[in-house]
Length: 400
Figure 1 (tube, rainbow, N blue to C red):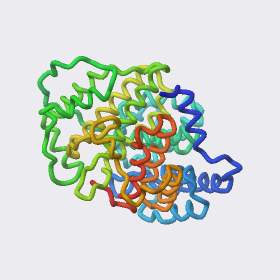
Figure 2 (cartoon, one colour; figure 1 turned 45 degrees about the vertical axis):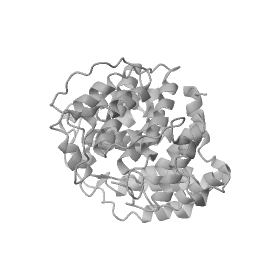
Figure 3 (cartoon, one colour; figure 1 turned 30 degrees about the vertical axis):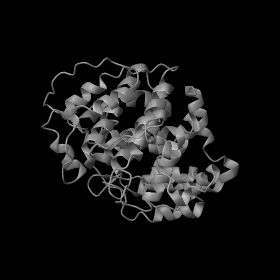
Figure 4 (cartoon, rainbow, N blue to C red; figure 1 turned 90 degrees about the vertical axis):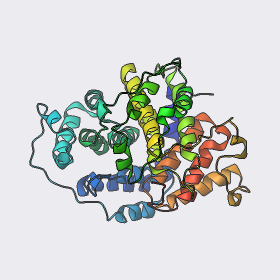
């Protein structure tokens, strides 16, 4: 049974350690998040994202103790020190600097002032719409960051989320038009749209060589992006308070099925599709704050981004609950089959806390949450979490 919006929020809050359980750890997290804000830049290596806030909060919720949290912070020596900028960004010129990462310090100062003047919730009401076409830029990281800010009511993380959206690189729409889509009736079920889209000959492209960015750029001169947009337009998104949880439930199953499907010879989870999982988790937190128009736009943009990543990374069969082949399970190696469900949960949790990767803890946390609110789905969510830490035992061991 699909929960209500209020039940989604209540269940999320129940996953947090209570103050009596982890008061020392909570103080450590807050201190380290504040240190990260002042000591490190939001980007490193030119285009990579500082994930420290995501990692600290996720590991804390999963049970990392104070010593482990400090160890995770101190081990991230690759992060760059906070930069400086002499630019003065104001309410009159902020839109002139969009997409310019060299002005992160100036945007941080500007949004810090905005949150101070407006307050936490009112600033979300003002700036989420103003930055709306940018929340899924830079592989959805601004939305993910906003989710952590809202979930933990963290002021500095909110300032960073606004800044990340303002400085993110957004996808350039393809100017190559695809033939008009015919013969498909709009539906409220995103699964029907996805299944039809993946069988579209126009989207059956051979995976290119090189980096993800290079493969994405290779498609800019093709009609792929426009055809994906056409398919997403066939989704009659339902965003009322009553129907939104149903749509989120459907998407959680879909994205988990895409993510867990065997992909590489080593069968490692896909790094870029992991962001589809964690950004959908963030959408569960952010969407209730938006009006219906922005809810619909964000969900369509999310599905469009996810489908594009799926095509760029090379399509593989998607295994979903109730479909042929799913009765054998999604990912459950022999060494784990004798564990009870409770023991398997604990095994995954401990493996995740011991894992240094920036993304594994976020994926596992999302899968634990999906299972808690939507049910077992024949083990899909739990086994997707298991596959994450079993096949990505450390940093940089994803399928790229």
